[in-house]
Image (cartoon, rainbow, N blue to C red):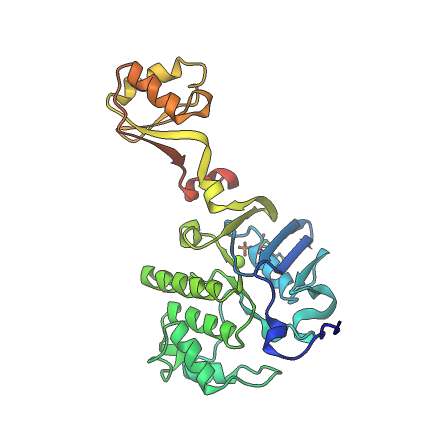
Length: 321
Ligand SMILES: Nc1ncnc2c1ncn2[C@@H]1O[C@H](COP(=O)(O)OP(=O)(O)O)[C@@H](O)[C@H]1O
Ligand SMILES: [Mg+2]
């Protein structure tokens, strides 16, 4: 049997299985004086996955991302990117630089240069990008046509998108974006979402932070929520928003129905949500049994659906703010 070639510098050697872990954060902590900005954080991002890193301002998102990129050293714990430990090599030292694209806080731009010249000016040790590649990323972020204007004439959102273009220039496998929706108007946020969806479809791994849940709820496969440096929860958006065993019931005379449900051994948690909707547990967690109970009691429910909470409300509850 022929030995498997190792590390052959072909395109094929860069293709990893879809579930390969691109970013592994392992018991990571960062202390500033008395304050633990990041506290024992453990998290993974696989290829083909967008993980939202969520938390209010000051939660520790940027500090975590800086450690992921080797920009600051962890107090303890480690980060692995594409199987290599960042703490040991830093991403600039290892061959990781071209495989990780990052935007941390505000992009560093030259205001008197054009958008295109800013992209040309990025001094990659691996050589600069081709004009064709620059065209591609300008298209991807929707700045084609404005690329010959000076950056100082750009809106905040355009600068942000140029920062994303810089992160994408080397066609990285892992994309780390710190609050990429900052400064984007609603249309810009939609464009950013479409862009991120295309990147994921191309089997990249994306780790992006936000303090506004609504921005990421629709695109993230998973979310990790942190507050005061600690991971509060990590789950799929679906699992987070679908409460356990509660149903939204549209029914006539909801006040009366609520009083009746409250009197049942399974119904203590029931409540009104809006004018015509009840949120309630079901007998034995069974929506059919809930329907039979209401009908038998003389009500006519027009809809019974699993109750999905607004992620923003969950976020506020989990972070207590
Ligand atoms: N260089 C630093 N020196 C001291 N404290 C810092 C430093 N950088 C961040 N912090 C503190 O660490 C905490 C987390 O900050 P940060 O990671 O920027 O939060 P986020 O990005 O989630 O808004 C904050 O309390 C912040 O004040
Ligand atoms: Mg931040």
